[in-house]
Length: 404
Image (cartoon, rainbow, N blue to C red; front, side, top):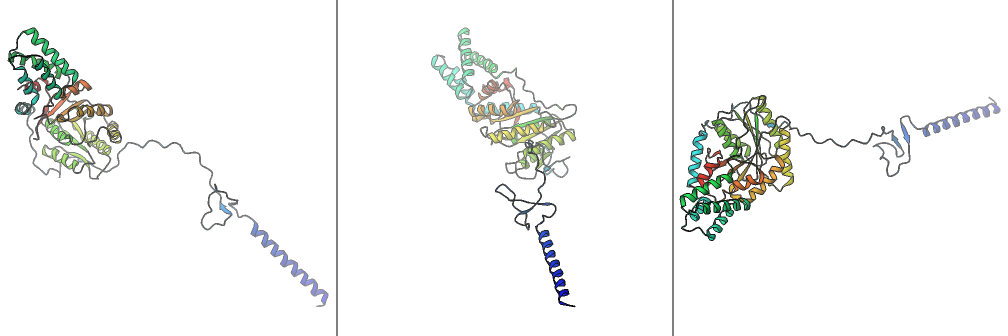
């Protein structure tokens, strides 16, 4: 091979090498399929882990602006224990509640014997030899201290004064009879005090029991269950007080004593609306006559808790109408009880009052004040700690007991 041939060969090899390098360089600068090259600013996404600084995966199409979130459905979680019968929970012997009429007689006797300053004070004043302006002023003060309210007190005193003046007699027995008649008018025997506890064609009656802390709601539900059982009604209880320790067990014990099952949650702080929902559902499935739902005590000035109570009622109404909303009040709280009643009535539409701790108190006038303010009747009264110390309220019996 001569020199010219070698030169030509070297030239061909050199051209081939240069061409190969150029091709490789061009391939390295080409963007791979499925990615794009970008210069990122502060609004761009950061590169994915393991990706180059300037090369990102192609983003998906930008989604449309999300719709406003739908309101949280008020349906309960499955954390509620539903008893289909009483098997396994009858830890105590089943008792036979006292008949309603016998209970009424005992309550009247207890109120007569109680230290009730209202009736005793009025009778003492009206039994004086001479009823002058000072006596009428004392009568008015006694009524106001008994939480009768300003307007009812004025009505009663004016009516009594007119009748005594017209009769021209200050005989204690006659004046006492006049006082009885005027008090009965104020208590209003014409109000419908019946409980809406009659089963409907396709569902049970539903009773919701509400009130502030410490007034005895759970105890009232238990005692009312005894009243209904004594009337041969099939009852189911719902323990929707999920915040007070042992409240569900307390209610279940009340139910066990009269053979009534209780729907409750074993989870502390469970959604009370869940328990209420499941209790009503169980009542429908088991075809009971009445479902009673106990709720947690709550102060009337706590907006969040009152809203929660409204939710409990709304959730129940997904299944059935709430036939009765009973507000439990402590008779000794006086005018504060009236303020409680107003707020609860706005939130859950109170249909009746249960007045507890009426024995040994001078606050019996709260019966009139509440009924006048809300137009809602006192339907039940409690006069003691005994299991059968709850009975339907009767206007004439109440006044007679006050006046002994």
